[in-house]
Length: 365
Image (cartoon, rainbow, N blue to C red; front, side, top):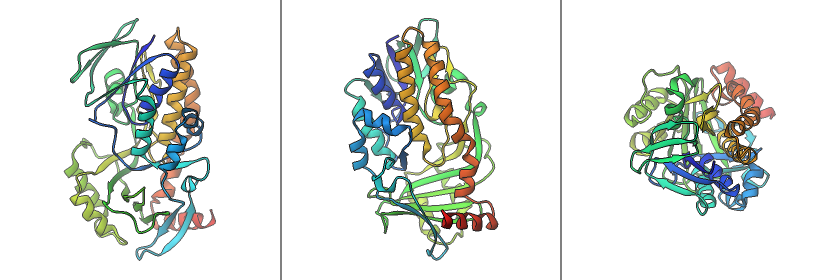
């Protein structure tokens, strides 16, 4: 059990490749994009991820790439601050760090690439496993055989679909949709995220690092048959949800109409009874997405480390290795998934009464 294929070069994939190589495995990472992911949406490195990246020796680079954000400011339609909350990352000065996702992915890729094979602009098309390994075909490359295949390919995982079945059996809509786009300029202030709410709606500007990010989150039932690659449809959905909003919403919607770089997806939980099918496993969002408050990247780093160390500890028995990984990592994931409603209530209150209560709570906090 030495050759391991990892699908996805975001956060979990390079972390897993790094630790597999350190434990004597040969890791190959395949990525659909033609280069490391470019999404700059800020994410947190905190909790169980901190000792992992420190052991990788990359924490100084992560801190150097950190945003300067220290707080969230809840503003009214005229831009006046109604309440503020200090962010735990506090501009990278404490143990927790907020960093653009693209920078985090690039740093992790740089750490792993000397000891792992990275193949960009390709994707898995079929998986056929037997007792000894997995035969894999690709859209571009020649077929290969691996001892294990690990899906680290996100919410809409190809590996999960091929090995576990259609995603609608495992994706659970959390009642929210989210859209983000870079603004193409710096924010007026680089020390705070500005958040404007109306019942069931949130619009925000995050200074990120150099180029501000606009975000929209809104409450909605699941939209049947939505194609997550249909950017024109996404633009229309965001415009319909936020048209006529106060604050700077009109300005931000103009950017949505103009940009070619719009991310749009449902806020979802991924829940599976097991993260393993024989010699095929899942890690990160592919296994257990909790996509709302920035926990996903930290859990992906921690999960990748746990998986690599479990495989090393149970080198002769991949089944026991996967069981050990799952037992340990579920203890971190499941409380976060249970708290997603509380997070949604804090970020996107449903009613004016709930909005007033959130603002009061933020003042107290």
